[in-house]
Every structure is written in structure tokens, then in C-alpha cells.
Image (cartoon, rainbow, N blue to C red):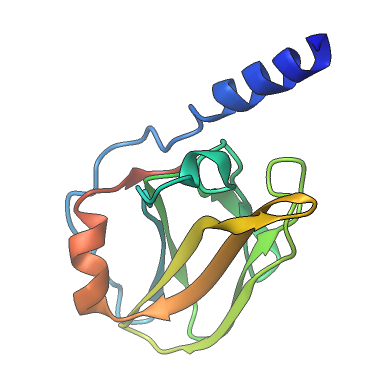
Length: 155
């Protein structure tokens, strides 16, 4: 019984793992010889998500071309400037993100912005416990801007 309480308290405390940086206040200028990559993670607010990876404090370390660029916490975003050419954005499996890596490859063009969204959620129960769904998808700028307005920097 004591172990159950310790695990419950640990999971509850991890729920505080939300992005705490400054609120999004607009796009940064894109230099003519670079591109920008925005990675978003919104609050889901769906029933039972508080028990899924979306709400228990689990957050991935994000890699950009193999380099750690920060942890993407709930309600947060990351933005990085990249050189034109092939770009690989991926989640890294770790203690805080015990899920398989998710990847997006793109060919960045100078002067452009690229947006991708990490979604997590509760997909139901199985014989072994909760089933968590994860998607990591590119999104269009017109879909990203309304979401960004509610997010804070996750650095």
C-alpha cells in the first residue's frame, strides 16, 4: 500500500511539468539565409488525459539534427533557427519520455517557417493499463498561430 501512495504522489507532482517561459508574443524575424522551426505542444484538456503522458509530467527532449534543443513541456513551444537543407526533428526516449521516438524530416528553405505539433492523449485501457496516443505532425502556419498565442516558451 505504501508503494502505491508513493507512486501516486510522484505522478501527481510530475503533473506540474508545464512550460514556464515567456508567453508567445509574435514571430521572430527570419533571416534571408535561414529558416525557422517551431515545435508546439498544447494542453489537451480531454477526459482522462491527466493520467496519460499528456498530463503526468512526461515530456520529451527534442532533437534537431541530433542536437538537444530543449524539453517540450505541456503548454509550451520551442523555436530554433536552422540552415537551409535537410532537417530532422525528433523526440528522444528517456525517463521523462518512455515512448518510442517520433520524427519529422523536412527540407528547409531559406526565409521560411516550419511548424510541427506534438499531441498526446488517453486512448483507453488495456489489460496492462493506460493506452497513450502520440502524434507528431507538421501543421500549417494558419493553424499554428492561434495555438501559439496560448503557449509559453518551453526552454
